[in-house]
Length: 319
Image (spheres, rainbow, N blue to C red):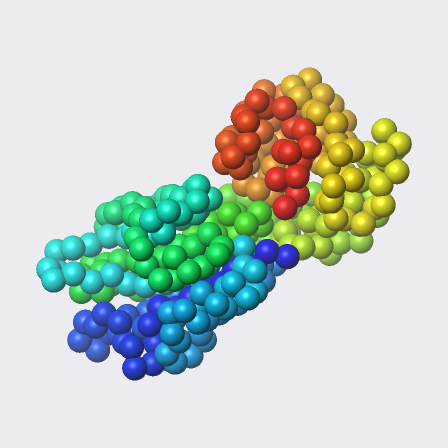
């Protein structure tokens, strides 16, 4: 199960930025808890650095993430400036951050821009303690300026939409398909029709025994890996233990799939792409669209974008 540490900036005697009776620490905690609850409903293991109005030292925030071997660390903040004209949203990453941090931050910025913000201030690099001392990819989100009236109005009026967009973007970065607000593919809260279809197929074809709830969590992910192992055993006599764990033996048994391939392995590939956010028809046919989605996924994952789904691509899909 993927683990995300949610860090509500400031707290306790450290109010953060202040605008009259509006304290940054309160906005940070409110949004952090809302995003965390959405992530938990989507099957993500969420760990908070604080859930109440308490002060947590900066190094302790990083230690919480490091000790729990988190997959992602996200700090929530509101910005401030000497002039009330300053506005917009930005995401900070460490000065020497990895490509994963950069890609996750860029995706988060775009997700919030799609909801609606005054200005997109982009991704910036900074030598901040929580970014520097945290082992996992780490982001610090500045969700508007607390001394700008329109940014505050947007924070309040679009609060739920922001929380939905943040949760969906963060979940996708750790391999979980999360659609808190329903959106184009879902029928209701956290429910996704295509994921329900995937779960139904895994149950019917591989006896997965999943609850068909449209939520892609650790049980569904394990069932997809089991399906892959079953197919590799049947097609190639791989002799794998069907345990839902993508280990070295499973990786070694994977054969290359490319444009023109057909069958259940292609369907498993397409399902894996879908839950990573790369939607392609689940038709068991490796066509042009699937090739393009494989290339896009490979690029995002730091793999050679050749459009061929081999051991490394499947390994990245099944993380």
